[in-house]
Length: 256
Image 1 (cartoon, helix red, strand yellow):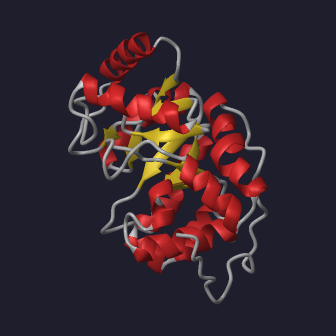
Image 2 (cartoon, one colour):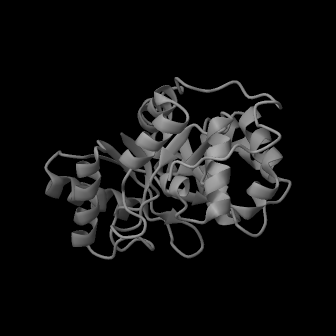
């Protein structure tokens, strides 16, 4: 499995504090069946994105792992004014594996109407935005039509594996399953921060999605689509989105 969203690097954000913590997370990912990890530290007002430091830390971690885990750079890109100025100058350090997919994170308190235009401008610059964990964003749970509109405009969606088993509450859990069954989800990632409450594990999600939605969907969102994004290719699995795709009455899932 390929994990596109993982806070694996030590001392850069609210993820692991030491290299030993990072190595423990990497070992857990390997044991879980994860083969590729994109190290995605936060790029926001609290944590400045230092690409040179990210690259150096990734190389150090690679050397310690001896090739047992394929690592790449990226970030958890917050749509702030400062970040948007920086990405217009040089987008590729922010993107997954320095290709053209970008993990985009929204504020939990406000998403201005102008965001539609901002996302469109990123696409005009050759960037393919991936909306991260919208099931955990109260605004998007309340106004899912905004998410569907962004998908129609060419954006993609990544949900967090832990949401499927209620790590972030019943609201995100229900919404994650509903959107997954409705064809609105293109990736599932760990968004891991540690080996405790938010570990780098995806196998349980693969098994749960297979049981609830089918093996083809699990293969698409945990293997095929993430690998394509990692390599900078078009996604092989993009469901056609129509207004009728999302059920009027939410279907309940009781796997966990």
